Image (cartoon, rainbow, N blue to C red; front, top):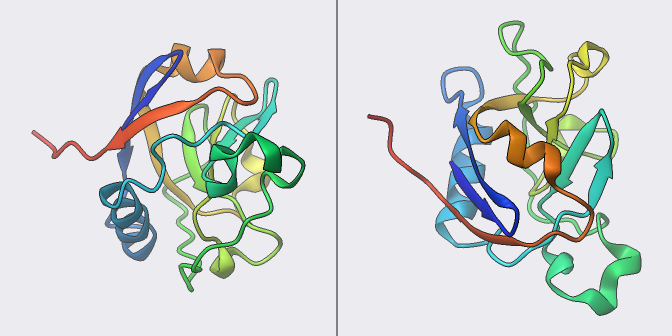
Length: 149
């Protein structure tokens, strides 16, 4: 998945063998252009950068960014193979991993304490320097799927 932001572009691979429903859900959203024009709504330095709230396209709704809920994936696909290493891409949720919907985050450092509670479905494979530069309210220009070579 290729994410073009106003700070540059990064790419992450997905793990359809370990998290098939999660990966299919995210790819479906990308193909519907769901993420285009959204903004980064959470940045915790040294920890995570989070995106995926459709309300972030509207600056007048800034006080509720991060609270929108979309259709849940309905399953928590935990894998002992995929852990919260630097650059892990995982689904955000409010306490029930099966209710994760459109929001995901990228870890800026290893965070193995998250492994039992959050589904890792991908990992940044290029542009981690861009991810590290992202700030709150930075705009996502476009997100696309690039088929594996």
